[in-house]
Image (cartoon, rainbow, N blue to C red; front, side, top):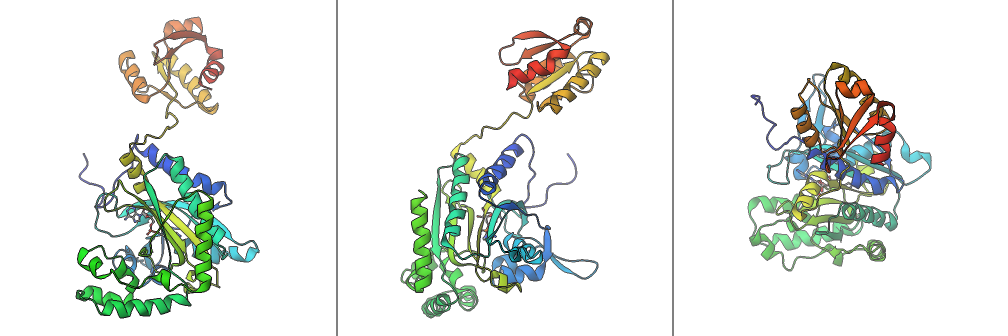
Length: 420
Ligand code: HAM
């Protein structure tokens, strides 16, 4: 063991489990790729100011959870705690919205960093796959994204998740609601920290998990009763489209997200097998974010799904993904000449698309066959001196134990035929 360990709140992805992570990322991306979303990749760090303005000065993410640093040149940077602000920044910087083809639909996949108190499902380095549709105010887009997330989870075989849906209103109706909520909250018996929140971010108080607070919130005014006519119609349309698409949802008037940029549609996917960190994905509409970071008005909507938590959800449901075998054929050479000949064959097989590996380090037959078994390969390809003299190799089916001699110049074609 080395003297070093992975930093607190992080963990390493190692084979064979890491294959599940890749498959989850791929499964989330697949429906997006089929729906007109193009891949975007942005730097792992951005100006602190981008997140302060975008995610919100009053959020836990910005005030407590950002990894910030000052560069030698004096720039204030932060490891990205989320993807939306960066993706919108990149789209604006490249003028993607000016190409006359709105919405700009983008998807991304990568690492995010939050200095949170680590626990199961909550890490300081975690992984998201996200999607953003920038520049169009259309409830069909909100519904499209929610449907795509739901399809991604379903394609993985998950069933134990629920979709919570809410509307947070817009710049017309939210301030009125906010004031009404503040009035209500000021009349409650709350601790000092929570009272401070009433002024800065009253909606977050609704999200307080403590029983003593929840009990007092029973009669709190709800955004849904304060939505303006436009927001109400928009929300009803999203709900109708989801119903038509066969995506069940639960109206959750208390759903508040941990980022300040949301307007109108907000949603979260929760999984009941995960305990406290049950949100496996979330998102919503952010019609004002572009202006908040210095851009033009670009109403947008998006989500990010947590890869780590989706993997935990698979484990909780006991779902085993059917993954392509890492190795289909394992070659076992006995002797130097055989090693050279098999190296050539393995190279050729790989170029033909067969996942092939070789026993290295001059292992004896017994050890090499153990490696072949461990690799999970369907076939072993054995080559010894006598085979070489006869111009054949032995193809062994590792499940049945059956073995056949193949002429060396037929090996690639025969193996491909057996595997496909
Ligand atoms: P978020 O809800 O903060 O939204 O994160 C999305 C998902 O990332 C969560 O539902 C969760 O699965 C995962 N996640 C967040 N924090 C952690 C953590 N510390 N450890 C493990 N997993 C975590 C956003 O990030 C928004 N940018 C989503 C969005 C995109 N809204 C609009 N567009």
